Image 1 (spheres, rainbow, N blue to C red):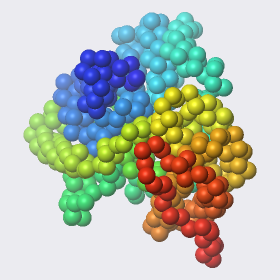
Image 2 (cartoon, rainbow, N blue to C red):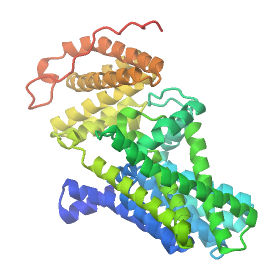
Image 3 (cartoon, helix red, strand yellow):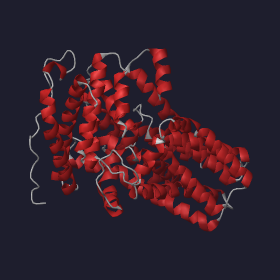
Image 4 (tube, rainbow, N blue to C red):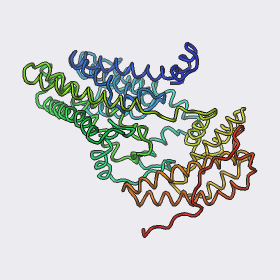
Length: 500
């Protein structure tokens, strides 16, 4: 993403539009990959329907296609490329050691780019073992060599950073000491939330909606009823392919559908048994893990819908009606999302460095000294201040998860007074914002006990560091050019336990 943005800036100058061209390059490549996957391995109609579905949304995918993040939305492209190579292997027409090497290369690059592309690799591996057994030694050697080549950038980076990339994946499954303030949820709790709220809300209205409730329900019904019916047909075809073997063209397509259905199962298992939880306060960003899943689900539904369209008669009419309703609902919801006015674009000088500080803190945890070193390398005083402010904002996540005030004290002790002023301002601002959010989530009944406990921990943190903040000279509490200290009011004492 950095290289794409740099090239765009060089060609068109630095602007938001030029920055978005890098994200659009991934979205366009994903559209091409979707159409090619449907056209080559299923039918022309399947490719066309999949492309239309991607162009109109779902709204969460449309949102993700405009973010220059290098994240889960873009990992869908690598999953589609994996599937393209794997379908060739599964068909037998393109089975060769070099094809296995290409699959390894694409998979390695995908894992380096974003670990969720590993879900499609696991689905391909499970289906291959199920249908074909173990690959031949030479094929396996080429696959491993290709994977090592694709993972080379990841290995080079992690060798110098204590394998933080691997640690992050392990943290998602309860290993290590993650910075994330995850709320403990069992698989059944997560499944209920997924089916009853997260999936339908996250895909269609990831930023919420100000439309009348009747209109919201109508959009959700027009979106999900055709989608679920098409998915049911696709799942049934995949299972029937197991019984018929690969003798006919339809049966061969069903075996490919089986890979996609297996992907859905792998995703559910990984999501339900990981520590990852949906943070509604993050709006669309909180649902980012669903981005590649939405692309795969849409593709399964597209293949099933295209088959009905090809049959003619009543089936074609039903499929055309369902497709029309889905595209209309998806387009309407995507337009609603795009019409939101976000104050995030009302940026002040140095706001980018504030975000950089948050990310630097998350990236270097638990080595706080490395975050400090990164901020001190900046020459501009305002940019340096805003980076330390962002580090302070990020510090709340570590404290919310563990409540270790001693660690906060040790971190503050290594800072100069002007750095401490910036960090404490960001920390107190972050606590104020986060405690408001936790209070709202508790009032909505979303794990109220855990959210109230986390809120009390943060309020204790604010009370403990407020004295440090007030000792810092006024001119060092704020960045250059601001005439007042902007720290929102916080209760000085933590709230009582309220009967818990």
